[in-house]
Image (cartoon, rainbow, N blue to C red; front, side):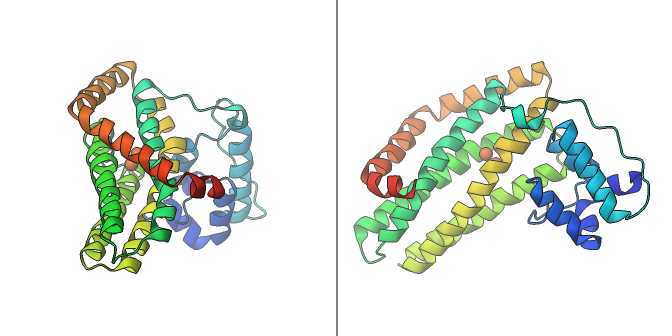
Length: 266
Ligand SMILES: [Fe+2]
Ligand SMILES: [Fe+2]
């Protein structure tokens, strides 16, 4: 089992596909992950399973990779059970989670905008231009830049989990570039497909950061680093203060304009 703990997860899943299904059962999304070089031991650590779940998962993996053999399982780490765990973030991480909240509010109204989008209408094109500006300025230049330039810089840049997060950011940017190009040629279907692709990437990405990345980072940052992050984030907030007000009110106006559709979806 020790050998498997030090093996990249994609290699294990490639050799033993039922391990992929088993990880999905524990809501550990290694199968769709674009990187997959995390070691099995790191995955268990990053996902912070309860000691009971960790023990059961390791025993079931051992049953797949070494069927019928008695194997020595690693001692589960002593942590609070995940089932009773409510994530409590440090102040700088909490600020990032709140920013996700604004992005999620925009993503919630996006289907209604795209449903009614008519590429021949100047007003509709203007509305989508506003949405693209929100994505590029608030979600990317403000929020993702805070993550990439400040938060991720506290950790080893070679970490697989950070590579996966940066790849998500790049995939999001590629969808946005495609949406901008489609809008310029008044291609309504192209705009809708690109923005739906963006929404899919971001929704999953935010979930991974809120539930896995940020709690893992909080467990690995010193008090001093948390204080420094808080100060550096505050400096960025001050620089963007006027824009933040503008984008928060933009999302509020969208919600008001599409209140009926949003409540139907919810
Ligand atoms: Fe991110
Ligand atoms: Fe984020």
